[in-house]
Image (cartoon, rainbow, N blue to C red; front, side, top):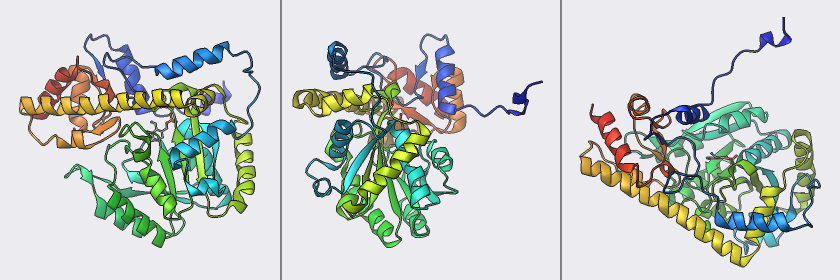
Length: 403
Ligand code: PMP
């Protein structure tokens, strides 16, 4: 007998399960379009050269120790992260109305931020887009939120945003609902609101007294331009919203497993910063006590050195332009094959992902017949495409669509 006999097997996490199936697949031309991680033109993971260089310098630096970081992380890192998100000249920074705390990547920022909003601001209802990154629901529920809701986002018929539906759902949201908004490169659809649409979203959120929780997992990765990708967050700040934003350095620095993130908090009066920091300190203390140092040191070093920063900016331009090229390549292969349907959405979408519009049955067919792994929703990671496999993938999609 065992005390553990009561434990029931939980369901698998789809994305990691598919990734494992891919790894175990012995087919030579298999293609992995599952996990949202960057791959180079040979399908290989890429450590950013500026990260390698910084790590080499760090390895030689005898002054770096393995002492604990403060509970809220490395100051140089959090300050640089807030500046990158809001723009260094943002008046809320000078007014002391914005600050950051280091978190365990984007997920950790969402987790600590939502627990804080639930415990201290007593918010219980949260809204996420339908569809969204599959972890938003669980993270907020684990933080104490009790009422999950969705707002309409993707319209499968037009393969674009159901903007009227979105606005109607926000208009019906109860006061103080927390609205999770993707800062840029919406996961999984790859479709972001236009500036005019963001303005309307802000109007409704202001009128209905809703609270914006931005999730910024792809700054710089969407357009290749850090400022452009932060437009929505900066616009809300300019409009006078109080808000929080979880930032991830997994994608834009390629530091997936180092868990480097920041939670930025903007409030209307600097008077409440000290109490807020003290309560965030207690939340982190009870959860993991303090964050890891390595990745935060790498990011802080690069963001605060002009030459390294310029090198990094070139890297993100390079990565985002490779993604854009692969979107073009996939669309033009499908057009060449005469695959039925309109494939313009592939190039209109931005960021790592494309919601292809392939059905679950077609997605399963690609996995089974072609060893091309993608999520059952038809989401593909564009980085999994490269000049060596895009034709193969297009032919497989053609077959799945026409058979
Ligand atoms: N939010 C979104 C929308 C994401 O796509 C991701 C990464 N898949 C995350 C948050 C968090 O990722 P991480 O915890 O690795 O930073």
